[in-house]
Image (cartoon, rainbow, N blue to C red; front, side):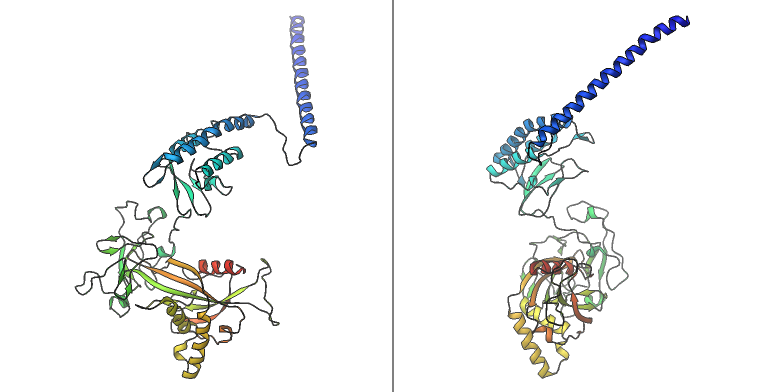
Length: 456
């Protein structure tokens, strides 16, 4: 039996040996194939990669064929398949969702855009005269959603609606940012806590029956000073919203805002607090923010460059607010019937130079220099809604921010700075992204730095 067992095992060993020989032959062939591919690649453009026949390669060839259908779907939908409220491309989305049969997420096929498809989609959108932001390199697909498009700012873009499975062309690719400081806790100047509002419930279009905002109007506002509106419902107060109401401008830079029970609604959404809080007007409260800048220079008068960015450093006049202790641009509210240009000059003079406390002769000299600076071509850097901690559901801040630049440094730069009544301190501050500022003022200064080619 032992002899028979040895005879039986010998054929098995022979088979194993043959199997190893066959495997070695296959490896030798694969090695020869790689050598031939490398030798061919040496004579070509070094940037041209060596093509290998893989499963991904077969998918790429399959994608090229499907790319024609993707292009056709885009052309067909863009030429006539329109839905109310925007451009709808359901056919294209259907093709995009089935282009890659080997990539799945949550039971749905996910798109893998390659350069061939991008070129075909660009060609199709160019033919019909539409933007192709969906095909630009900065456009990518979110990993959490099969077709939700994330894009960078441009003039127009395609936005996917996951509920209707359509692509819609919008006039602006950047959605209005969620206001964050308008939901801060507690409300400024008090210990009142706002009703907590999560990000997905900020928009008024989100149905939220459980929303119960805290009612609050500061006593100083409720006492009816000249700069504040009376309470709504008062017999002597019948405001006309979304228009210029007498001398008070109740229009918004964002367009017409909605009313609920005759109360204006914050166009950026819920804040967790109803009433007016610290703001005097129902609806938009208009302000003006003058940004006065100069170049930072050394003892020889040469511009100082930042060691990291190598760009020249701008300085701006900043005040430290008494109410919250934060540094800010010296701005203020636009008086009824006042031109914004006058507000910019008045607020700067009062808050940064304390012009009201100056002697008559010195006040006239200061006024002359300020007038000369503000007569120049100011650079408007912002005009719109402000994410201000004082905002409520029914009252909010809007502003016009204008940059007045002292290029030579012999105008406002020579005037002594003195804090006004609303400011604790005033000084020249270097423009830098690391410097914390009040409300949306960092955004304004970033725009100034980019426009002036300065460090940020």
